[in-house]
Length: 221
Image 1 (cartoon, rainbow, N blue to C red):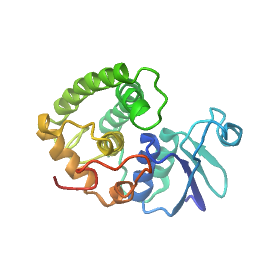
Image 2 (image 1 turned 135 degrees about the horizontal axis):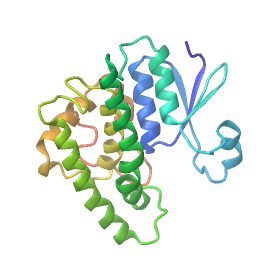
Image 3 (image 1 turned 60 degrees about the horizontal axis):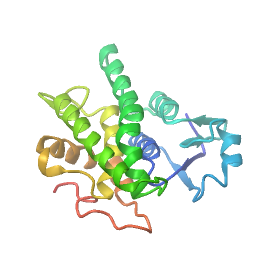
């Protein structure tokens, strides 16, 4: 069991939000610790994680750094049915999809859009938005393909890949970047994801610089 948990996170960071949903799913008590300026605190974060990246889970007995490492550890000791699945092929597919979202989706969609909308780190805003929105359409088509004949991305039940994808989509939805009208099947799936109790906390998140979209906190819209 993991004890005295502190999660170092950023409120709109999709990996952090993903970890929070897995902790909530496993009904683990944890404290959130958000640094407002990660660059100025790089030394502190590097003392916990050599890459100086979040999320980081500090426990009574040690530190677990990185979203994949954290969710794997929590899934292992959490006591709830594993979100990775019951058979080797489902677990493998979930891990493949986690890599897809935390690598391709993040670099091709999330960073270009959120660099403008939230992080304010992009030099060419119009080009970044154009790139992110065009790539988002391609990724949504792939998500729609995965959902054909299935209730979840990796099969007939919601698994860890659904919560990972949902975390990324939730941040984009906050800033009104989800074209729901063009993807009703994805909208239906996402409503199931965000209606799970483990999503309640992140749907209450707000940032001071922008109000959420009209659909952000609605589990049925």
